[in-house]
Length: 148
Image (cartoon, rainbow, N blue to C red; front, side):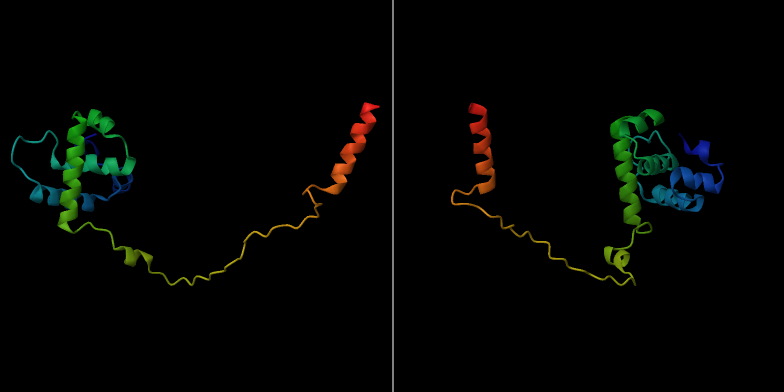
């Protein structure tokens, strides 16, 4: 799927497909066009298509082989594209997640209850040899009655 095919979708459908709204997508494309290297052979996909490929990978988590087949590029090219786009967006500093401490702050009061659940041995009556007396005598009676 190319960006040209989906650029005319409504904002709700575009966000549903890619995970980001149109304005954020355009900001990301502008960052990629300004910061990604342009030397060497020109890429087969435009910057918008590279970003769309990466967003689809994040959103759907399809295999890189399947993404490559859909876009007409090799699996290794998909891997390199995803890595370059991720690196460029992270280095820009505009698209970062808040830190761990920021995510963990909460006004919820947590109450802790501790329960002692250690095992205790059960005391059972035993004779000198360690077997139960009632069971031992009951088995002797059965054997003697069977032999006669």
